[in-house]
Image (cartoon, rainbow, N blue to C red; front, side, top):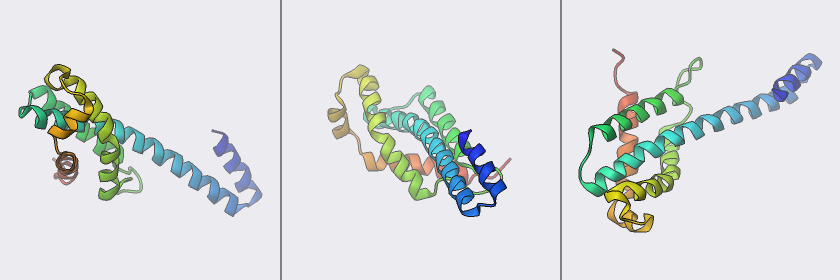
Length: 147
């Protein structure tokens, strides 16, 4: 809120450069919050994909959780007024890669009832495949026709 008041003051003074600097800061803060939110949902998607690969099975619950999280990622990533997306495909991949260690830690508690430490589980699954699978789900959902 302080930034908005400062922006108003700068605009009233006619300080366009100062105003633009504040706008850029506000934009960066907003994008940071969106990325954090997307990362949280990415952990959920990756968690279930890790469990699917490690246990060579799936459950309806995991599938629904993946679908719901993919939808939330798409919703959070979509720009409302400006159209387009906050994160590009490469930025989504990077966000998934950053979320992977958290997903692996959580998966280590759940795969085969917590039988593996994260380092052991990491050897049982393929991070690149899982990240690419998650990205594919996100992008496939994004490109679905509206119905």
